[in-house]
Image (tube, rainbow, N blue to C red):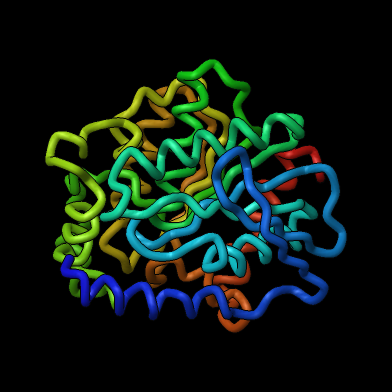
Length: 278
């Protein structure tokens, strides 16, 4: 990905941070350890905490672009939310984002009961949410109560048949786009097989309950279906929801699309239930 294209993409992606927020939402700057973040408070939040990882292929986006989805989940689930501003490639290639995810989660645990902590993320942020939990498990940290992902990118080896099989129906990405993001994020081809880059290849045993939402009209469909199968084989409680005809992170349109609204309600109820809020 050349610098001009990257700069244009980053400028465009800031528009996601300007999407409407629930009434009464307050956003303030904070840090989790050394990682910048945004504290997102919505009316009715309580002691539970949602750690949110934004999407953007590990190369675009920031904590603010994650706020609209994070706040929509938080307001429905009654949770406080922290949106993480993890480092991006190519300036900071893998494993910088995974390191920041773990550092943020570790810092969050200093003031939160892990039984009341949940994680969520969209696209690359979904993959990073899983990588964060895997790294936390391997570091011997208490695990969060649950993880929810929207169109998660879990396989940077790009092995899924949907990568090319769904190109004709995906209105957002094609296989070349995904390859470009992966090449920008990964320092070399071997890094793609690291479980923190491709959680679909990880030992998933011991993970908390997972909710994986994905549209049928996206090239990353198989990332979620394959992860769900591997999680089930590892005795992890996993719920896979495939929304027919929906595109990548269709949940962005929850204010106008009944299908997206229903998906958000399901995800929020899942997070609330596992965090003890409901």
